[in-house]
Image (cartoon, rainbow, N blue to C red):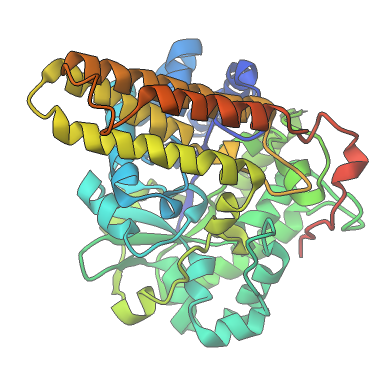
Amino acid sequence: MKPRILFLPHGNLQYSQLDPARRPWVIDQSYEPLFDLVEKTGAKIGFEASGETLKVMADTRPKVLAKLKALMDAGLVEGVGSPFTHIMLANLPPEIGLGSLKDGLNAWEKYTGHRPRLGWNPECSWADFLPDIFQEAGFDSLVMDGDSFFLGFPEIREATGLDYDVRGHSNKSKLFRIEDFIKDKPQYQRYLTNVSQTSSGLKLLFRVDFFANPMLWYLMGATEGNRTEPVSLDEITGLLGRWKDRAEATGSFVIPYAEDAEYIGTSAYFYVKQFGHARFFEHEPESVDRFASLLETATACGYEFATPSELIDQSEVIQLDDKHFKSIERGSAWHGGTARAWLNTPQARILDPVCHAVFEGVERLREAVSHNEAAAEFIEKARKAVTSAFVSDSRWPPAPTSPGRFNVRESIEDLKKANIYLEKAMIAERIADQRSLYSPNIMHTQILSIEEELMAMEYFGEVPEEIASKEPTAVS
């Protein structure tokens, strides 16, 4: 049997520096061409999208959502679930993440009629409770960051020379050394060519940057002073060719592209992340053609396209050693970066305490109004609003870059909504005078206070680009 290959684009319309008014444009330039390409070629893929992304598609581009649903009905696209809001799960109390994961699954079922089994963890942030909340939400499998997993082996960590730093974006350039280290070591390769399983029964699929990043640079056709020539299709052919041999020897599949879907059709965040340039979501129609070339190259190399479920159900399963699984570093994230970097920005340091205070109000009032349906409904609305205020991209990226002013504004408006809903819950329960439980009036002034502070800041893209110069992240 041919080794199988899974392309897994990840869709998120709550992107930092993506003005909400341009979200439908991204659907037009990225998601629709991707779906058209799948229909034209018959290539099977996975497609992850947050519940918020699906909602924006339904509200603004229902015809594109209908294309996605038709492809899912035909078995060419399998949906992959995630939190409804693009939040950093490792940075938040488990109950916030669990609620948003359930909301995300419900959104897939509402908008497509399908309920995903495979979960996507935004930015692959890591904490020990994450497998538990994915399983409790209803997932039986999870996409994992293979780089973070491999760095739990001391010998691989030493070979990469990687040191985590919450002040940086990533360690992409050092992650290429992982492939160099495991190129003759099938005992490590097998994690990328088989399904793994935890002791609790959660199935795991591993993605890695040494696959995804060269493909990203190929899609962008970029050099930007780091290379003489852009990544060529010959290089991609070589990468897929050597891993075809490894897949045949150690397992049955590979996952070469588990990266942002927005790089198919737009430049998304590429020039910000890689070079610190104030260039966001430029039209890149050639990247759609290049993605088509990736699919053609995979076929030419002898792979068979597969959906996530086909990999999960038809592959060998490696039972993971719990001791090593628990060695994945808490606070790590994909690209050799850290989840805690999202907690370390000025915006996060100002927003997060207020978000947590409002969420504490949600929890306290939930206990107080357990038998009042009207009040409970307001509290549920408050929970969803404050979860939305925790969205990761109003807290990212770190200086000298920043989120967009509009990203931060959305979180502030969500906090205002949550506070109003909690006040309405107290009125419905007739406990508006019990302000020792929660004080909407004081919290209102707290939100106004941080609004003044956050809106007085300078934001990247509003100041001269040269201020944001930084060292580029090279592609190997």
